[in-house]
Length: 207
Image (cartoon, rainbow, N blue to C red; front, top):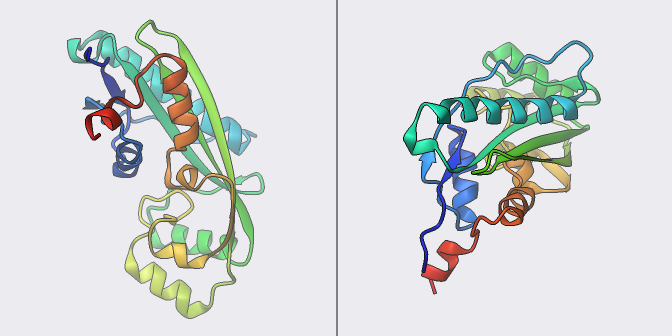
């Protein structure tokens, strides 16, 4: 069996790595990039997710020019945005931010967008966007206080992770679960397979 091409995940997110591994895809290298995630004036949530995924991919390409390990590789970059209407919720870093997000999400539906950008070894860029709708139950004061005390909200878009404690708050999900976690597998695997990456390489070795 011929060796597969290299794959670089331009993210330090353990959730995105775990999702790729769930699909039987093992990146050869993690190359996190830090982009300014501040929305532009009037920028829609879906546009922000697409722009940041593209920007992170471009940063990864710039880095690859200086590193032999990164050259001639497939590269995946992604960004996830949580929005209540057109209001983009932050990646919560303070208790006040997390509390505000919980109050906005309580008893309402919101949308989660993940932009995914693939850079091929030839330098071509492919883009996909996944959108999911999530509905939270109406949260009691006790539930909010307990969740905030857990600290699980820290660094999470919208102040929660669907695979964590906040999964108990979710009444309904329309769309991709893996999108809400942070990397929509259908779109990601479709991008890779469409440009010739052997997505089933590791499946065969487990037979």
